[in-house]
Image 1 (cartoon, rainbow, N blue to C red):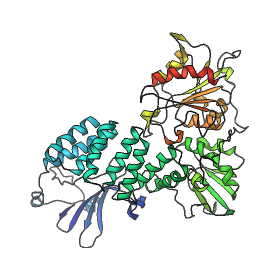
Image 2 (image 1 turned 90 degrees about the horizontal axis):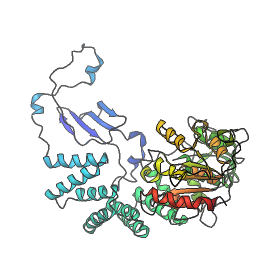
Image 3 (image 1 turned 180 degrees about the horizontal axis):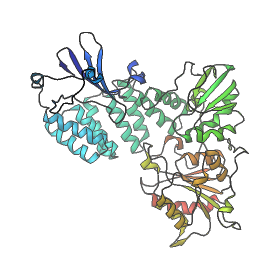
Image 4 (image 1 turned 180 degrees about the vertical axis):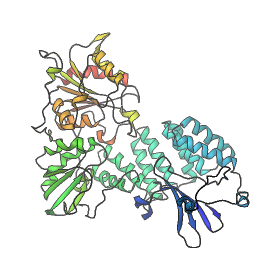
Length: 517
């Protein structure tokens, strides 16, 4: 903040989800989370001008006023004059040059935010030589090591911090993340609980603890903790005047269920919709366009709507789809695992797969998906290089002629298309206009092999034999199973070492004949 005569120039940052801010009413006012520079009349408290960043900038570290040498000539009635200010030279002369140590620290944080971890770590360590007791630097160094997946260095750094700063909730949370990275789940849970002892309203620690509890099969504790996602800035709650359903009697009410997060999550949690429909008078389902036809085919859904402006009298209560198992008190013992629980509407018609190749072929048909969304936070663990996946189409140095392979991947680059053609894989991209159409092709296949994507959830929901390829750092939804708890017909195969897709693909080659028996 700076003062010029009767005005204060204030730099504002977006609210960040930290142990300090979690749970405050301010963090829940999504519309007020703006980043920019405001000029306020200190006598009246009124905002007289502001610059707001709509994207790209989330935090203001400092404000510096610069003189101009070539001012534009404006007409005296120009509206810009009402929001333009001239800074006197004597005011500018009062500014102090930034502290070199602070500049270096800001540079380290900048590298960290841009995921330039080596540069960030080097600068953090350099700064620590000048200030070895800095809590800020020690914490951020530990987080940088964790982000770079140098788990042991992260644990050593963060353990050293929490020994002296026992109430540093964020450090405990990051330490839990590092232990989870080493698959030390009990230690991770203990760290998250230490974070919550320091700050009971720390939403991220609650959420992380919930995810691990679900991964470990403890649904009873996991679902309530998972609800803390709505206190995190990365999650955007459904805004409406109607109350959220908590499990009370709604036999005379219309319930709206809306999807959240990814399309795969909607497909996975659709299994709970028949139970929900039995409790309400009418069920309205809101989903994205790619899912619309698929969910329109569910008998338990009375009406399918797309996101957007909804009539005020459309429903009485609502619930996010991923909150349903908590509302229904779902445990491992009563988890609905009957498949298929989705079916393709008869109105959805696709060409027989035989028309794409040899119509006389009787070879088993195998669908392939190797990549998830590039914007997903752990996509580097989820997605497999196309070159590794296409090793399945080889037998030694020659093509594997035992099976017919089909690509269910979207989108495809021109390079991908060339690689598929060269490997003899049939490209279905142009036909995959919705999940219902994708499902219609899956139903014609004998096996689907996929990394963690929405398509493998669809294959499992349709009770198609599937193999899911995972890294050791897979999402909680796959738990610690070899055969999926959620999809009984889905085999789970994991990398022996993080990032080693080649070794996993070789094991998959041996597994395919077993799955096709």
